[in-house]
Length: 123
Image 1: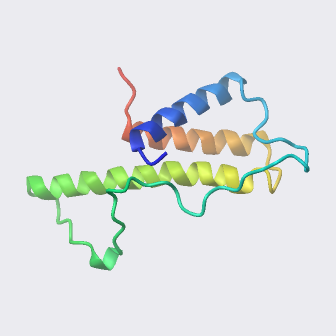
Image 2: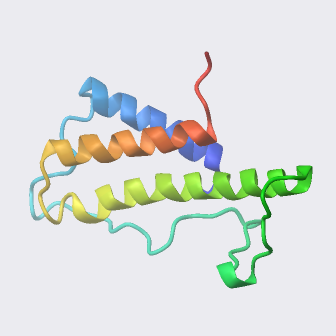
């Protein structure tokens, strides 16, 4: 999903199912089972414009409201990408390399941790 909030919510849902054992196997061990490869690039909102770092404006040190907003904006994108990377590693390498359950545990935990920055849990 391109929406960071939906991505964080889905991460929580999948992690809960994984942690409770409702998802018992991370992949179908049958080598003939259909498998869809992860996309080459994660879904992004049409409003997101990727800019080469050398073409991005300098953020400064956070001394003004504008630079603080820009820094927080950048951090939100970084966390969204980190969620994508965690799920990508699971999808791209988990089945192919027949990784153990602990591999999946670790990357699900990373995705959940990153999702907390996008969509913090209610106290």
